[in-house]
Amino acid sequence: MQQGKSSQPVVGVMSGTSLDGVDIALCLFGQESGKYTYQFLQAETIPLPVEWLRLLSDPFSLSGEQLASAHVAFGKFLGEEVKQFLRRHQTRVSLIASHGHTLYHQPGNGFTFQLGHGAAIAHAAGVDTVCDFRTGDVVLGGQGAPLVPIGDELLFGEYDACLNLGGFANISCRNFQNRRIGFDISPCNFILNHLAQRAGYEYDGGGKMAASGQCIPQLLETLNALDYYSADTPKSLGAEWVHQFIYPLIMGEEFLLNDLLNTVTEHIAIQIGHVLRRENIHSLLITGGGAKNTYLTERIQKHVDGKVTIPDPKTIDYKEALIFAFLGYLRSAEKVNVLSSITGASMDSCAGAIYKAFPSVGY
Image 1: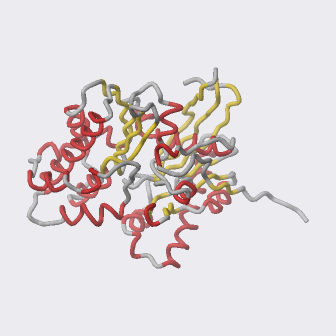
Image 2: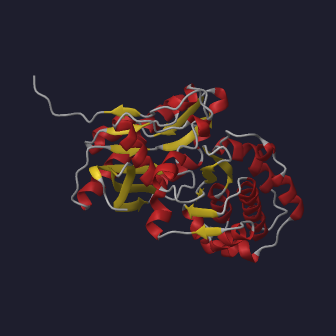
Image 3: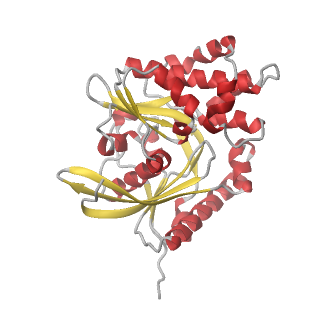
């Protein structure tokens, strides 16, 4: 889209549960004829260093002191990466919007936690930073997730639904009452990548390993019967749920790895297809790393009656970073950026904690 009036550049920073790197997107937002506009200016994915991969893969053993230290250290890491990104592209911005990296997400217990302290990001990058987008909604009784649907509504509203295939598969769409809804459908790359890594691969490129496997009917039936799938919305998933309910089912040695990948892929496609049929979806935009998994998207297509759009590579890879940049843009304008119709909170909110960059001051 072309930039509109009162355009403002914002850097969006996204570290997802699939652990495929930190996405950094420099985006331009504005308004034209009453509608929001956006433009990608630059975007990159920064690989996670080994020490961060190790910690983010197994954060539950950290002590409170270690977690507090990692919170600041990861913020410094993100801020330094943004600073280097801006230097490479010879660009200055006035705002960073950081999702951080979700370690704990338990809205039913009243909390959610994204690693990467905003003050550390702001100081390291020298740029005002918005972060912690989820906590405000959780304290209002909401799920604190998903947050992307307001961006789907305001930036990608021409589609019936937007499906993101990241660590988790989540969707947003308009329901029969013409209200925007959104929720996590199922785990996605969080499990698929974990299984591929058992064989020494970072991920299952194109879904080739899954395509070569055979479905395990009993396991598929057990996965599809998990209570989460019949629960009412609003609802959301986190790593803890996968560790508690999925991993015990797939960790046995009796299953061949490619058969597990095939079965989990089919499980994901079935759950997505069920939601698409229930919500009467006829045009679907698919983004996220899973959009490059040809076998997965083919299986999803088998369960969809309508047009499936897989966009350009930049939109596939950086749509979530774009939308978190947009959430920061809305937060800086003190406009609603979280919809209670999606999260189940008691009210819409303008969420996100703002940390100012530390200026050089004299006394």
